[in-house]
Length: 317
Image (cartoon, rainbow, N blue to C red):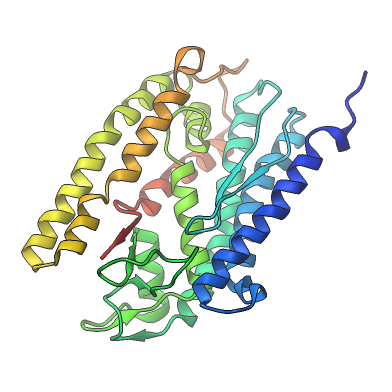
């Protein structure tokens, strides 16, 4: 019997999306420190636009290639962002390298096409003053920024993020600070989500793109990336702790620096679980040919990872 598209996961997908919208609005309301839920739209609308563009980039590309794919399932969660993103299941086999590249790259490229303008607008709106340490987020309560002894939470910096601040605001003068608006925070979160997805391992977006480019050799490359993550975590924490000691940071700041590498350890554990047994290697394609144009797209997509790389994501100071 032919499967009915409407009954093919869409009721659950739409329900989860509605709950996620509510959860993200709560996070935005808390970040704004407002009494009204609707005040959270300056955070919720741009963040959900980024995540929706990312997930439907995958979905539309898969449908265009005739690959059976589930609708996106958003994950509501009462955390800093109000969501843990979304998952999407590839239920059909991807037969060609070109199709694999299109499906893998469509998500991060579509998400970035929304995230960069959002972040640019947010940076232009964000005041620069001396109230907070450089590059920090304003303190809030509830589902927004965690309350910490040091009084604020430091967001991660990447080459692309710093370049946007430099181009749009001329950089941050010594002794002055940038206070991210909720819209700027949503755009920054889009960069973070894209960076995570572009880790070139397993069946993350970066793993799909790398396999389309390198073929079965990517299985070895991806395993090396995963093995390197604990060392990356230790390096990030060690460098930040040493820097904090040299600058005379207080106990709360030093503790935040010491835990800065924890997200990389968490992703190491998740990827180890994802790459067990039959999942250790990427599913093969029927051909070994990637068209010249798509080869350029693959390199461009993979090179986004170092541009978006944040040694530390969020840490209390």
